[in-house]
Image (cartoon, rainbow, N blue to C red; front, side, top):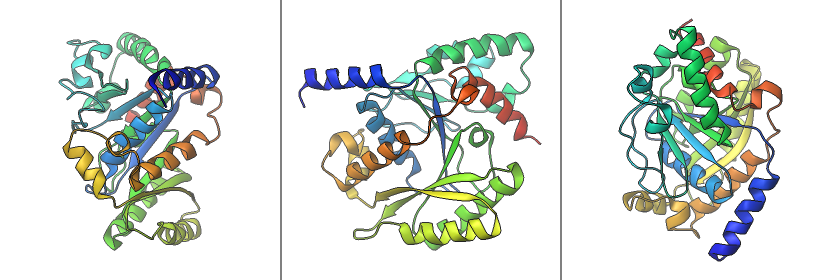
Length: 286
């Protein structure tokens, strides 16, 4: 597709897309499951499909250069009055926003009414220019505030037995500690010829039987050497190697996420993002 045709297609998608915001957390029970690369490439895939994407992450983990320049500040500088929100959001060539929260989630719940109102207006302006907010909470078995701010929670694991056990532990804590009842699963680093469905079937059966939760299959990301090769080049696999297996998987995942039911009412309103973050910061301290 030539540049002109691509711009036309993107413009048509923007014109036809409904006015709501999806807020999706990608959670991992431990580091090393390929979650950051997954989110980076999903952001690129969605952006190239005409979606406006914002990534919010707890830790200052630098994105690949193609997604966004290295963040210099996090949200704590905004809470201290040193920066405005728009000044700390970094954007790459595809227009993807990257916002590091740092320790700010702990401070959101302590803001006075005037500060909350001012920051809420800045977040509303940012969210109104966003279709997908992809959240990257800290990896670990304990739930963190950024997870609780999501409309949808995607658990990311690998086929390795220990990773699956830890993922179930995280699922259990989210279900029993915060009464969450619906999750999605992505299995990464899936070897050629496999699809990850057996892992999903076992987790889904166990979670349904013992926790009473719903776990839906979202998809898999292949163990593709092109992912790491693209990252070393400072790019996403979906742009560096568009014919790779991993790129096909990312397209399938993005299409599945776009097909989810639309968030209704206040849940999908742009200004709700800030209020979800504040509420989540309070819940996480209970």
